[in-house]
Length: 142
Image 1 (tube, rainbow, N blue to C red):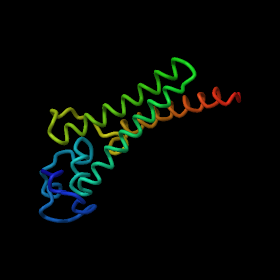
Image 2: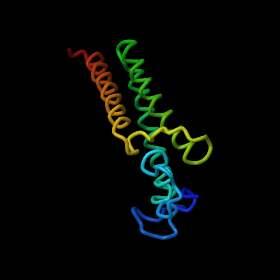
Image 3: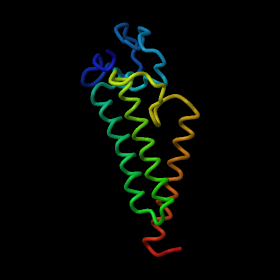
Image 4: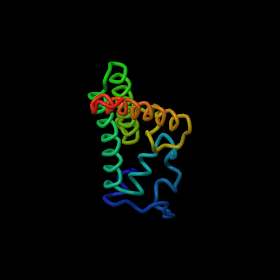
């Protein structure tokens, strides 16, 4: 209901409308598990598509870095983090849209939760290190 009520452009960020599904208290755990529904209501279809595109972009970029890694460990790290971000993101979006049962998985980079956020940042740090090592190998600089 919340994603559909946002329509194309949404109801606006942090609105106080009484007709809002979020303000009516119909969304449980709106800051963590169901943050995608809040994005769909406040920013509409355009905002939800932007979040989907960004999660997809980060995941694909990790896979591209894994292809340019100089060793198997770098390939596994970058591909694993890319799969982790993509799978966790689309699992959360599936739960928020009602396609999948509730699992309690947060949306990467968006949901409120320190442990998940720190874990994602550590994983992205590893991927950036793999990218740095791959660039050194390709350019010939040590």
